[in-house]
Length: 144
Image 1 (cartoon, rainbow, N blue to C red):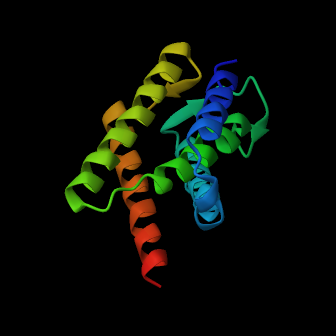
Image 2: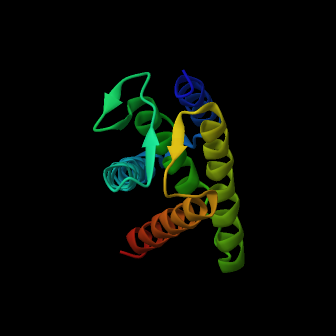
Image 3: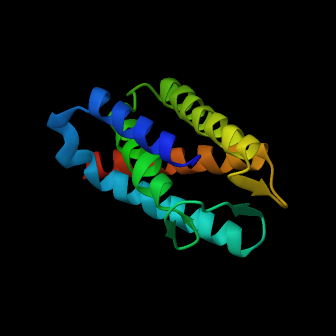
């Protein structure tokens, strides 16, 4: 069950690091992150870029435990911890993307994700793009 432990860990991190005072402001970003994850993973599986071993609950061809675990919780935590300094935003984005890539490396080693026409570098680029999009959306929302 390679999807269950990250699910539990992400909710534990969420409970420890969540700023409850900002939850109303940042909750939509959890759902945005879930939507981005589903869009990327469903598309990649359908295009034959990688395959996901679904020993647990299948949610549109991806793991429900990942969608409602790391994607949702860490999307909110990422937005709650975006720095104000532009250079720090870039560094923060790269660090978060590297953390997600490290998690994916473990899933590939465990056989939960099987690369067909994909690589860790491609995943890193997608993750950087996703976190950058979250930061842009967050700052646009704050400016409105």
